[in-house]
Amino acid sequence: MGRRAFLRLASGAGACAFAWPVLAACGASEAGTQREQVGALPPMRDKAPPKQPRRGQLRLGATPETVGDLLLPLISAQLCAVDPRNGDVHGDLAERVEFAGDLRVAFTLRADARFHPGADGLAQALTADSVQHDFAMRAAAREFLFTEVVLKVEAPDPRTVVLQLKAPFATLFEALSDPLQASIRGAGKYEKLNLPLGAGPFIPALVEEGAMLLGANQLYHRPGLPLLEAISVQIRPDQASLEALAAGGGLDVHHSTVGQEPPRNLGMKRAIRPGRGMFGVAMSVATIQRGDRKGAPGVFQDERARRAVALSLDRVQILGEWHALESGPVGPAFGSDALKPDELQRHAIYQRQPQAAVGLLAAANQAELAFSMMAPDTVDARALLTSVQKQVAEAGMRLRPVLTPQAEWETALRAGDFEAVLFDSSDLRTPDAGLRLHTSSGLEGTFSPWGYSNPVYDAEVRHALSAIAPAERGSRAQAAQRVLLDSVPALLPIGSRIEEAWVSNTLLGYEWEADRLNESSLAATWRLVDPGRKS
Image (cartoon, rainbow, N blue to C red; front, side, top):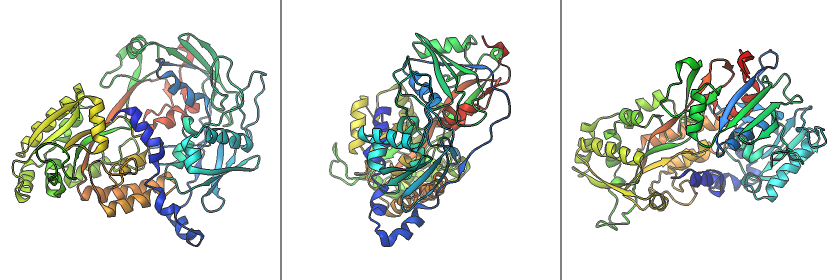
């Protein structure tokens, strides 16, 4: 499914539809049970920065399409930041978080936070009233977090912000750490950028056609940071132009094409991380909706048929062809929620055993099982479909490829109008999406496109999505996924494509694998050990 469609699903009305109904119904007499379900709030960590003088200018690159994604996290500040690798919550504008009653989450702000200087050259104080006002503006704009999740925002004193939630929301801290959803914005705008004033580690200092310079925020609220004097951004028309700039030594970090090694003379290393997407094979367990067998029970209602497909897949081959990492229901980009690779590789349905698959089909009276598999008519999808077709043939199955235009495939996938389908999403955005894909109400909170229903799994997901602390949610999410894999889901996850970057050996503190945490909160700790060569 396309990125735009999944961004809407992952951050729109469907994002919490599955998590809310049970807990939202709890009354005052059940407050203790609800609090037990929600669990404790996470400690807010504040890692001491390296002790070194501010120095150096980091060189980054972007295209007109990506410059906004690069710029916003560098100039913005949020209440907190979340490390997707382990679920740790780090303080940003807030230094502490605690419950102030049932579903009332109180943040204590740092005493010295300020917005970037406005047109008058003054840097206004960033207080609880500032946060309350900005969140009210977001609510007035009908933004999801502040209309569907947060009931009320209070500012009882200049350093305390209290969020009254409508119900437990599993990705609250991830949402609050997202610059797009919850950066705290000042009243004015930058002189040459049509953006509200931020409070992040860097300030736009020079904006020209094809280039931008960000200077260090001298009044940044985290003492001793940032460690860079400046960040320059070269804007090129397309990815090929950026590749050429990087290959010529013009960048310190470059989001590279997968599989490309940096030239040896550049003094750069190759960094790899899993993307937030996931691809796999889905089988309908619902009644067949099209073709000669319309109205007949789906063959994959039998768990043995689904298991046979799982055992026929050569995951090692597919992962290699797609430059991907092994994925469970929750992808490896969300390390705190995902099952670890060694656990996945040990699981029965991740083993390749085509002869065992033959035996399962015979026992299910489905020897020489024939079925169609739908996929979008793209180069990547055709290649994957060909691999899967050959692999299931070794177990005696006959797969008939059905290639359709992207829009038609997406429509059929949403409607559950297929016998089997190649599933592919480039961005599931948050870890809960991977869980909800397999529930009886599906990602959009209405129905499962594959017709799959497992009440035990659904209950485990509700339990996981009632936790507010990312690490606690992650532990529960892993338990839910074990239940799901043991029952052989209708959607078999295969992998998550990797994302790569070239990173200068002179740049320290740049944690590519930390994803959005690296590009927002950790940016203040980026540092150059040999800045003398910068022009």
